Image (tube, rainbow, N blue to C red; front, side, top):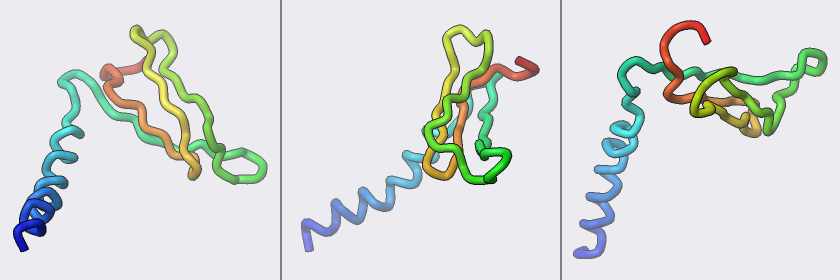
Length: 78
């Protein structure tokens, strides 16, 4: 019973710690998207996505479903 209490507390606190890390930096935005092949309509795995001209570089790689997330992108047109 004593070993299950710390594990339970860890599981209860995990959603709060993960949520706290998602807070955006003021003056920035998060861009989410999908990359699909225009002919086959299948997701493109491991595609490189970048914000042109960003210093430092802002990049992401699409996952197995073609999804990507670019974090801390300055507000406005890039």
